Length: 124
Image 1: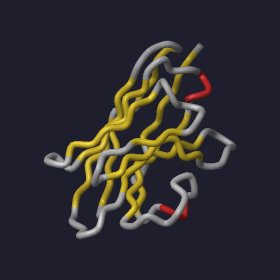
Image 2 (image 1 turned 180 degrees about the vertical axis):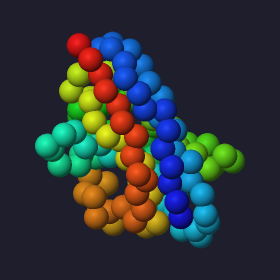
Image 3 (image 1 turned 90 degrees about the vertical axis):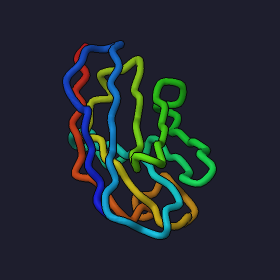
Image 4 (image 1 turned 60 degrees about the vertical axis):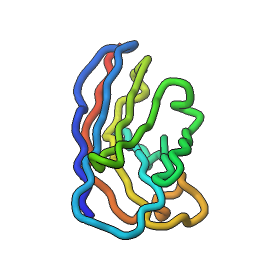
């Protein structure tokens, strides 16, 4: 399984961006997809997940109400619509894949595959 993110860029506070993750390769097991981010000098932070089967979505408090995660099973993609961006959203954003549920989406070890990341910069 390979994950490739796109859609990052430099924007101003209040703007929107849409990130897309394309999943290639096959796996018989896909429990969920999600997104992490990592700001300079900080640890990776889980921000969103979507259950691939029933489509349930989950968010961290830091992005709840501003970001929307969605999936397209036919295209094998997962998107992250980011609205009302803030300077503190500046980070590298990573797409992740979990073959099975392991108890806690927020933990990096929950996720089996990671993309290379796409950079998002939000200026004041």
